[in-house]
Length: 610
Image 1 (cartoon, helix red, strand yellow):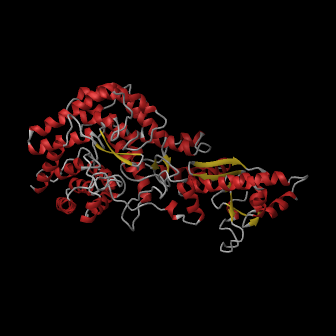
Image 2 (image 1 turned 90 degrees about the vertical axis):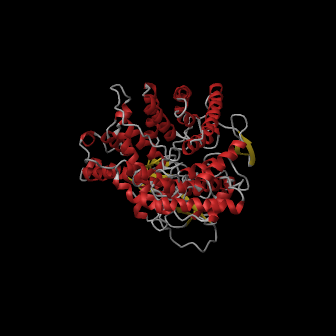
Image 3 (image 1 turned 30 degrees about the horizontal axis):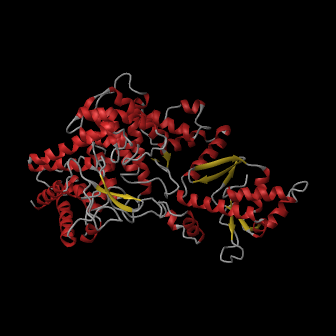
């Protein structure tokens, strides 16, 4: 009873803090703390109202449901007079619609319709929390509840966008590629686990083989990122994922602090890390996909063992002990979940209050679902007498599969093989053509299997083999390095080139070396960047400059040596071309007099010479 009693205590406190039909919650505005009312599931009135619906069900107290319904009527009135600013699940209007399915399905559909134009906004991200994947999940819930035809077109819009914006990892696919991250993000709120969850739920509901293949590729990507030593899927945001001064990033790079750009965090929460991954894998195993059982077991094991110290610092659903508790309860680990609940109670007893989820407001209690007390109360409700049934952290679709109509959008009827062919055509447009494109793919293969099949198929084909080698090299370069490191390297290159342009003598006295990441193959030069591989035809002058700069060389000596290999007075042309190669980060600059650097580049010249 102690856990239910604490949930009731939180509910009573929230009732006393209700202002009319709403609550204010913490918002950070220009680094200042403000209390505002918003509509959302994550940090606003809707999320708190859902806690009260759960509390009413657990206690049988009608006044808790009355409070929830009063709050949601206020949200409906607000939404009727205010166009949606976001179509997100957790942080936008479609999450409100998902919640309204429990009290007013008609209003849920009415308020969802104006969100459709927002689905095509090119500025949208892809994740579950605030992006396209979350929108698709909410729309799928609405379709499961109503069967309304226009929802299929909206779901198809989201699916098409997720297909178009998927990026290949060494294995699998990821989304929301960013120069602020080490790589494509893992995890539930922003990463591949959450996107894979949304794809899997939608695929199961609609019987979509293609979307199911996409969901498996999301999980496959995370498998390559698993850190066995930590038993965790790292948070791959770099140390500089916020709006820091670019000069700070560049100076850290110049000081050789490259780990800041190549190493993720060992986070263990719903938003990032094992707990969120666990929600996605636990659901997959519930659907009979036994290949994810090992991942689920690791995540559940990692969720246990929270300390009072951690609960004092991070008690919330989003990135705290409450989120861990819900996963443990969902996995049937009642003893471990109860231990997490006792840790939360002890933390509150010691502090006198629960800390909010905001790093800049740990001294305050928030009221919201994911960053405050409503979510902690919701976690306690998972420790009731019956089995835990989470509807909020991993909102699975409980409805039976619904066969697609004959006129369903093509993207929803794609087979797994068609989805695989799509990505082969995208990644290997020069080789996956003609009779090879028409050949049957290996049965039940992954994208990784398909790449291996293509390589073996073109082997010995003189025309295609060379083209495939170029495309394979491009793929390898695009999946090899930290995106954040590539981005800061390019920033430093631009700054260095600007300094050289301002003072010609600086370039002449500097020492240059070929960037070890670039490759030359078949008359093309390939240079990886944070947002993709740049490919260009290799100009003869560029080839000569790269050859002369193999190893560390004085720029002045390079200019003279190259100029002697061409007719006429070409020193200025050579100098300008060197400047462009520095700006493109194809040539890196070593500080004059730096005796700590080895005398030869790590670059293997045989790997790039034509």
